[in-house]
Image (cartoon, rainbow, N blue to C red; front, side):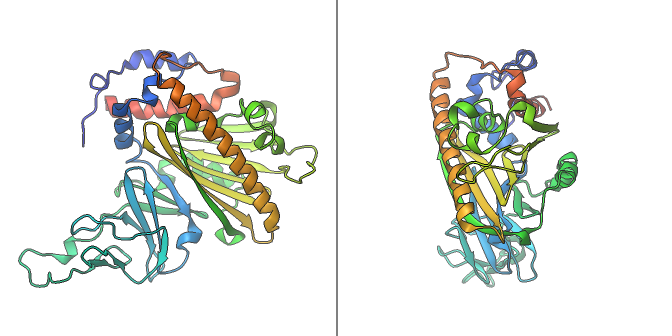
Length: 372
């Protein structure tokens, strides 16, 4: 592991502490500097719980799902006994990909390079022509494990195989998750659609944008802003250690297209888990950085079993339009900030408290890594 220090990364901790306390952002260099990006990948995205995908993709024994999580290729399996497992999708022989494609159903994971195969619990099943070879220990050659958990209808992974359980890392979130009425029963929902966005922006700009609705009247007047009532006086927010929740009041009148939210709850857990439940739709998504100026955002939409499919599709189209508007805005932000002529951004606390909250969480992770 690389040793990182404030001097090594040219970070003035005291100055940034003061700036953040006075409603400024972290230095804008942190949005584009490759050294900062590498630091974040090692100290944040290698050690925290991330959203992998819906339980529906690995619901039955033999189900296998694959996703690239930043720099980590990860495969999640459900073995014959119904247990979940997660591993790096890397063969222990010569490093080729073990599972290709997004999803499959199988009895074993077989690397097509040289034919090494693995059981669904990750143990090595067969290495052709290796029997009797001196020093070859089959039990030592299981796939490298990754921590995995189910939370309601969501699958979470942590690249650190020794990570504490999700609920131990976020006890206050788990308590609020249940107290605020989120329905975690996967049987309630039917999987409807998956959409992946590769956005030309830094992940922290994605975060800032996704936490506040200061921009909604200007950017989403015909999409998100028309369906949801998100003014500060209509929002009940809870800010906790590593998470936030929002509970919004219903719109007073139903729009002509019937896409008017009557219920809305959102849950965001650092760094990048988003669960949104409104009306008859469950919307789960996760973000992972790809490069300083590239962020991948994967979204999954699930509908109530008795919901109207056409209505669910209309909701998905509205969310898709909203995200595409956000993607365009944050890409422009990144291009402008990368010019390095504006050292800090200024927040408006009354409208951007949520963005400031997640900036503070990010900065706390920085400091813990920099200062020990």
